[in-house]
Image (cartoon, rainbow, N blue to C red; front, side, top):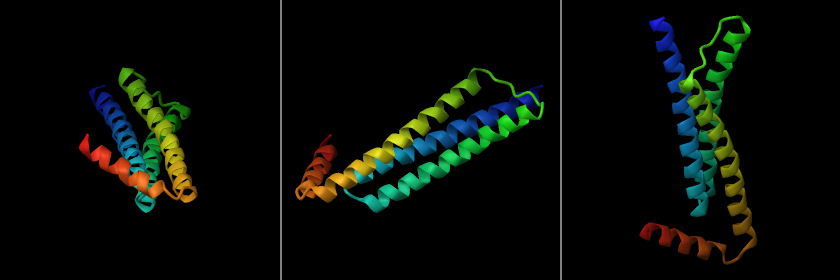
Length: 126
């Protein structure tokens, strides 16, 4: 029983860690786009997606175990991990949209780069 709890906690922590890393990379993508560095923003989105895939794979393994008749313990920790995963999924989806908006805005707005530099300078002061 103790080994089962330990294994379950490792799964939970794996999901939380991967989801957290994915969400952090998505936030970095937004910050890079805000500065007009779209290559870096795209790289951070790629990292976010990779973290999300890793977390989702852990979740899929659990679902497979359950489908095979091996009951997976669902406790508050597991619910918390699933919450982190769903939050990361939503955040990454929104980050992709924010990066796309910055790209489109800069492309269609001659003064966009000047405004971005101004925004970048004002965030450094805060």
